[in-house]
Length: 403
Image 1 (cartoon, rainbow, N blue to C red):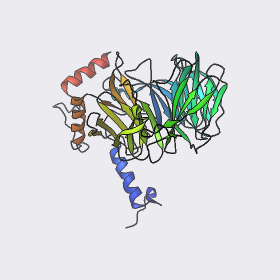
Image 2: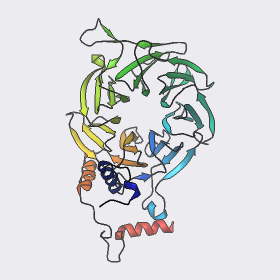
Image 3: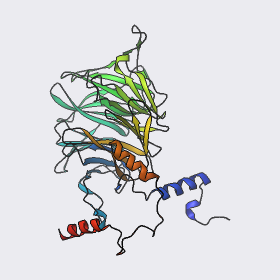
Image 4: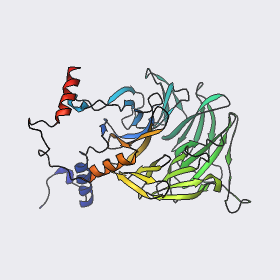
């Protein structure tokens, strides 16, 4: 029988099945989803509220400041989250975010080729940085020589270094000897960076990771020696088969090894003691977009829609957190008052922010609930009064209504 559903026109059976699968999965409540209005392409921690604050970059061209501390039963009041500020300006998707070292300004890279700047508290625009000839895909804030700087990387294969105050461009960096493709991510090396010189690693759409030493007056590419042949230099670090999407220096260890996430489906630990040769490899299974670390866990996420928790000691997969129904684009570590990892936030092009625990007992409980069959609509458990809430929840809701 031929379908008359216009949504089926020009679609293969596989694409119809995929769309149906995602539609069925979209209603799940795993990770306590907070729904935003457009695709979320990046997220960073709000340093003023490290336990429940995020800045998110949306495909609609907005940056939003989000409070994740939602009061119980907020949906009863038609409220799912608190967007405390919206930063406007870009007319194209926002791809990356950074906060100034002072915490007073936020920056966003966009498909419109510019880097936008706002005052964090007032959300007023403070200007933009123009220079890239293609999408801006990565930005970081740092300081060198007593001056605050911004470093950006674009699809134009260029890394640019900017003076934050004057908005002037200090350097334009390209690899002169090898083919460097679109920049995907940037990370500051915490071990080799000094007050006078910044060491930055860059990842791109080719398999190579490059390192750069940057001062206010100059820059140079740092060459790498082979671990087993210290007398021979290599131009780049190449431990992956294809694009590298994320770089993360390990802040849980004084060696600060370099962790990576790649389109080859793996996350790797590149050991500093071995001149950044891969020491550990975790096979996530599909494009890996983000990686986080704690003393006990490695957390990965990407195109397969899942957040995966790995045991650092054994390298084995501990659990898979299923909730998102589109690609996960970023992970953020929420921290307690002492700066310790408290929870994980994942964001996705499914328009949702989801929050996950880190404690083993809580993770086990989350996984257990995921494995329970969902109750058909209309068959949820009700109390004797026909309410969807327990007596305790009814009392708490009544108290909230009184307030």
